[in-house]
Length: 279
Image (cartoon, rainbow, N blue to C red; front, side):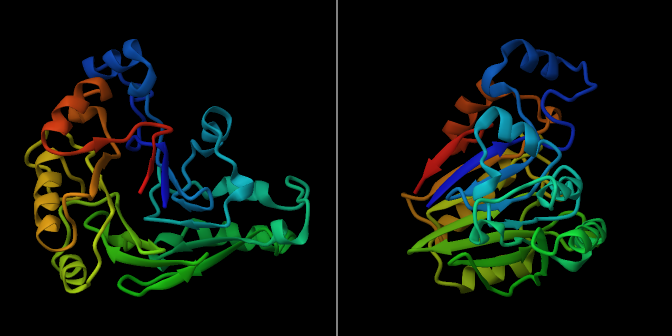
């Protein structure tokens, strides 16, 4: 299984688009991996997780090929993770396809609560072109077969009115835990994970707050991520599991260059825009 991170920042980007704080100024000056766009991740070039307003930038700058994407999993309805207006451009008159297989609708998956902006747009698009996109309702703690993957959404500790989820994704005896946006896992999510026999090969954890040691609710920092890692290692991970920090805000005070050595001491990889891992 392969995971590629296209966007690794929180809602305002990193540096923040209007911000002049010391961390943002340092990121602008350093450039490279210290510049982060908003959320987007792809598994094996075909299964997308979240669709932000920066998706077209990922196409232009990082080689994201949306023509290969067959399904999109949505974590929640915040616009740095779901910008549904660009789905219009998969419709007739905007996009042309080489064959009927490629023309099949892009399958979008979200909880009902996170579809309030998405679903009216999907319905509008389908009136013009029913082959463009299709919405599918998901329910936490229910597993779905999607493109040959076993996908299980679990409840996240985030914007509760949106019924946000994190995802377990399994295929060919490989298992990924993708946990963004969320604070320290809810009891019912821990119960599901620990009662399963899943051994994770790769764990991607929200680290929006980075150095903020009190960040356990809504988002996590390094301390909370370390607590999650240590608990997973008791039951659902081992010394071969890769743990990767992801989804960062400038409020966490560290740019990529400064975060890497700190994370390494705690046993974490650090995502950056266009970072790719195979496991």
